[in-house]
Length: 94
Image (spheres, rainbow, N blue to C red):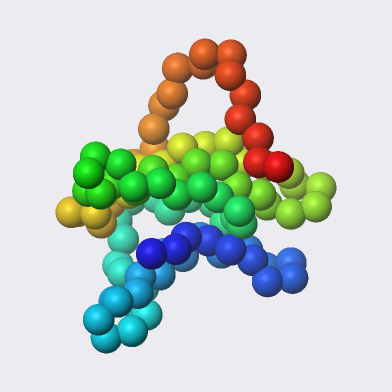
């Protein structure tokens, strides 16, 4: 599974999955509000692979980084926006 990406000045918020047995790509139908288009985000499996945590990303020159956090439930195919406590720690992508 991959999320987002960009080509030249066009950014994506699509999720694409790869069936590793048939080698077929597909775009699942998702519920909820999709995250904003971005590249270089950091999707990470959580909850034993039942959900995918997506955070951060880049929107292009002059538009900078995105600092939101979304969780995609693999069971319901629904995005949820997460509210995190401000701990003072700042994340960046180098």
